[in-house]
Image 1 (cartoon, rainbow, N blue to C red):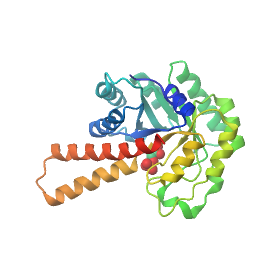
Image 2: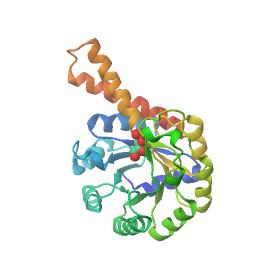
Image 3: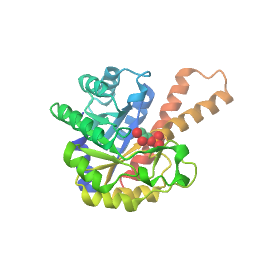
Image 4: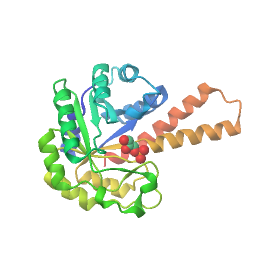
Amino acid sequence: MVNNLKALLKKAQDDKYALGSFNIYNYETIKGVFNAIKNAGVDGIIAFGAKYTSNMELNEVANLIRTVTAGYGKDIAIHLDHCSDFKLIKEAIDAGFTSVMIDGSALSYEENVALTKEVCDYAHQRSVSVEAELGSIALGEHSNEDHQEEKYTDPEKAKDFVDRTGVDCLAVSIGTVHGTYKGTPNISVKRLKEINALLDIPLVLHGGSGTPEDTIRECIANGICKININTEMSKNAVKAMYERTKENPKSHFSQLSVLAREKVTEVATKYINLFQR
Ligand code: 13P
């Protein structure tokens, strides 16, 4: 059954596990992710990034997720990932998304507070949960060596931000990156502990793909309840399709689609198992 993120994350926070938030952009990814969730018998977050609106329209995403997950006995959140545009957030809510992320991380602190507060007021009136981001999560090419600690989330600011906005969960910047790590990542669990000590709400880790398993376990033990995964599902699906077409250039699109879906399920299953601790 479809629910908002607040309900799902409360259970994760109480029982100290994390939910994977898996990015989807077509039928194969939706079905592939849902198969992993269903096989594991867990609650699930199916996330659509605002940057993928050329792949699917918002109402298609929400309706297709509802159709594919119909009758499933656990909670499913339909989440809009990384959106900096309030207008698109309103459209997603109208289309049936149950959760949205307002990403004001490129704005000044005060602008981020103001925009996030406005989105929370709007979304909460409609029973939709809100995730926000404070600090800035880098891309893969800016991983480990950069030590961009000035971009890490400041614990005191995080407390002020949550108090002033009423946001339901917060994405923190502690050294994970979106995309592929260049080398061994430098992730500050110390910073996470400092943030978690000041906040009561569930915390979110972006850039989950390729993050070392021990680090992920430590993060879950210290307040992370939602972990986003995108790159690894995409990379594994593309690699499998590439190898299959190299073997057989006449491969049919229908077979490649099923192959891609299976790879998505494999990756999502690996992370669901890891996140349950
Ligand atoms: P990865 O692409 O590194 O898995 O990160 C996904 C993410 O954080 C989406 O918001």
